[in-house]
Image (cartoon, rainbow, N blue to C red; front, side):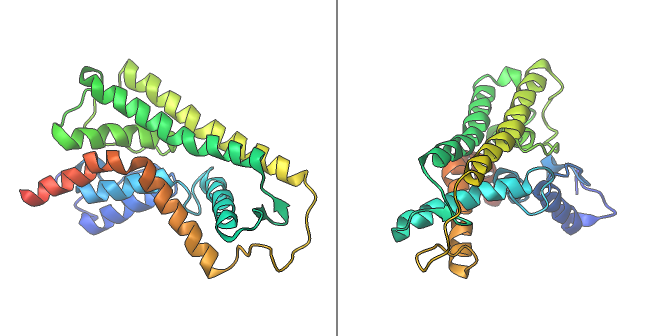
Length: 240
């Protein structure tokens, strides 16, 4: 129970860790650094997806980014012109979409790599795999504008203050501005009447496609570092 609030217990603490990272609340009722590796993995996954309904300032717009991508991929798979709400999604929108999607892994993984390559900068209190989890969580939380952290880091330093602000700014403004540009471009297009060939976005099949794209995109981008961090930490814990 180290790092956990005895009034709430393990179950309620783990539940709040999941909820607070889903909605970008940032408040905690336990030390996330003291949670089990898999609890930390869930918290990281919530912030990496960053599209849970109700996410403060970003939940809906991040979900729409995934929606655009799902429409584009589904259109390619079925041989139809990708369109959403009667408006075609063309090369210009896809290029902007690619920029939004690539910002997250580039910023988070670059800063994490630099911090781990120069351990004297991080003030890390844990060896081995948990050190990766601590550094990764710090930047993911900053990028997602969450605010929670693995507090084993001595993070009140110039390095952490500057790099986390960089992650925070790049995680907030481009992901708000670029979707607005895409929406403006779509609004300027003529709305085509719905036909038999139109892609239905309200079907269970498309919903499953959207969920699969969200999961696979996150895994493809971050699975290597998650394996080196919380997953390896969990396997080490299981081995004793």
